Amino acid sequence: MAALPSVQACCQRQPQPSCSQPALLLRRRQLGSSCSPRQRRTPQRAADVVRGLAAGADDGDDTGSMGVEAAAAAWWHRLGSPYDREIFLLAIPALFSVLLDPIMGMVSTAVIGSKLGTAPLAAVGLVTICFNFSNFIWNFLLYTTTPRIAAAAARKDDAGVSQIAAHGLWLAGVIGVSMTVLLSTQCPRIFAAMGAAPEVVAPAVAYMRARCLASPAILGYYVLSGTFRGFKDTRTPLAAGMFSNVLHLGLLLVLVFGLGWGVAGAGLATSISHWAGLAFLLATVLSRGYMRASDLARPPSWREVAPMLRNGLFLSARSLLAMGSLMWATRLIAGFGAVGLAAHEILRQIWVFSNQAFTSLDIATQSLVAFHLGKADRRSAAAVFRRTLGLAVAAGVAILGLLLAARESLPGVFTKDPAVVRQVALVLPLIAAYMPLDAAASVMDGVLLGSQEAGWMGRTMLFTAAACACGLLLCQRMQWPLVVIWFVIKFLTVGRLIGNTWRLWSRSGPLAGELRAAPAAAAAK
Picture 1 (cartoon, one colour):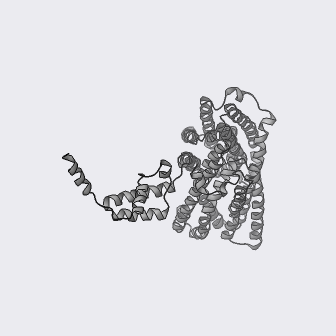
Picture 2: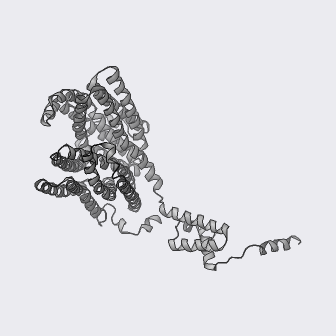
Picture 3: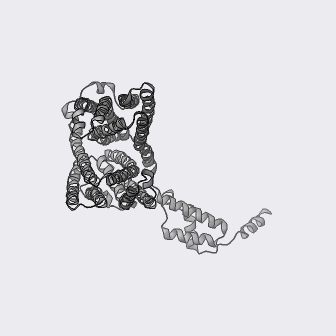
């Protein structure tokens, strides 16, 4: 009995709350003492958080700090998403993958230029443009493989996964071998038609004939990368890319510097590294059981590859229309002389490099949306899209600010010519202003690719390219300056954004009206 008074005294010594009962109840809810687990996962409204902070401040330093921690946790949870982990596990390796090849390309260019001189370097640049274009028009092998693999994986259809991957590799092999023969035999005529100087044609032919040996490997790499993306895995293609590029650099040093094989050695180093990357992915896909050797040994029928070719036709046409618009714009800018063309190339490099952040989120969106749609879960697919759209637009706003802040200093990284610097600084704010729109359009592309809406994307680009062509024709007649031509180029972004938005928010779209629902519905799922 002697202990009872001391307990009572202890209780009497506890500080009395100076806040109202509703505020105390609110603070308890923030600390998780009077709510269910479902309630604790739901972020507090901003007004409730403010009142909770005020109540905590009235109760002393300890409870005040607990209120601050609870409020901070609520805000952090509100900023987060249950899909963030999957999104970033896909997007971050994808970002490194898309940055890896340009960086290593710059390194190899520096090696060739320092060792072989101006004419071979010009030949390498000429071949790179032609060869990349010959592969770019077949990149539908990547974008059509990913959603089909993801849908089959969501259904746990292992046989379907194996057949899709095997059929894609057969298609890549046939197209790749055809491109190798075409480029190897016709490259002298191609370079002559492009107006290459005689001293450039000879090394360009040698480099092309060595490099085009990699065409089947590159197209096969597209298929296997799409296979891994369908399983929500971008780390394995990154590992293969790192292996391939490190091998490329080593072979380049040996064949060019060591053996003195010149541009032919440089092209051979590139081809061997591409085949090594393909072998890396092929060994991995077989070891994991994603593809059976028996499926790869059997040539597919036309009926089995027709769906991929049908969607590929739309995507290839889309790529050609976009590239054709950019090439027309470049031709107009070439009429401004060396200053205008140099400024345009710098602006193009800044634009392409800045868009890589959005490309990585596009890849994550495509993989996750395809997976959820494969399970007929439109609500989760819509929630993923809303999240990646928010992240991409936020990244676009951040890049916008960085480009504006570096408007005067960034051009100097590329050139010391004051006339070129002035041109770049004049147009750079325009490119920066469109970054959030580029981000939104890119992520929407990912949703449409993940839902196999290639036909809609092709038709959208047709109208967009037509509007861009009208603008460029007007620029040509009126002799408008570089900044106006870039404004017209950005029609490609605006047209994609309008077309994608129309399709995604329509009731017949791939998300079937889920985007019209309140975002809280997806979070509560």
